[in-house]
Image 1 (tube, rainbow, N blue to C red):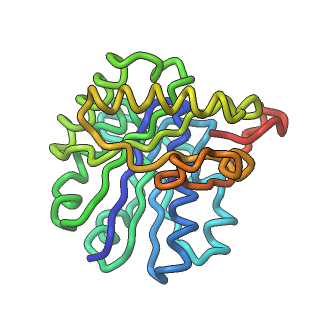
Image 2 (image 1 turned 135 degrees about the horizontal axis):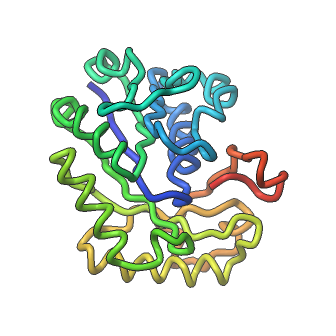
Image 3 (image 1 turned 120 degrees about the vertical axis):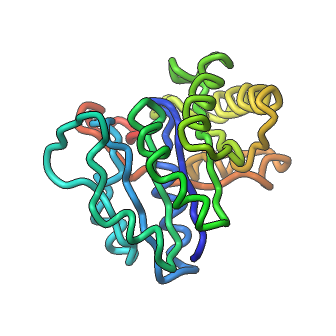
Length: 227
């Protein structure tokens, strides 16, 4: 049925930005890409804000339309079930909270049926909810228990938006590596902007991935992008 990659993380982790970049990179290799924005709560960094860019890359965007009302079950896009059963390469932007748990729990059987999937935990150690191991453990356990599927790896995304520099990235990444060892999960990628990527020491290049900032919330006043 094609590949499936799920990106989850706490508020400010940058999972939406990371997921968008993965989708755009994949567009050069696949003609059947579906990007499912299932982060149904976060009003600031929603990946559907990058709609025009995704469409320009021939990526099908599946996202809620209009104002959402939340009850006991999140209001999922109506076509997500059918698309998960079709032959395509799908990326899912998932919230790292109770609503995200409901979503992954609802979709878990379909995830398993697809067979080949990656479930990434995106960590920005400079965010309040990811600065301590216990908070990350709680998020992980919450999502894994709800979805009955396990995370397959970590994406290290250390940044402080416009204040990001090489030293900050390396220090933050070392912190993520420490978390990963205790979580017994591999660090699959280190995501950085191109200006940082070009300065990275050679030993980081094997996992480093360049990303572009596509999400720029208005409240940042154009400062440095929404991550």
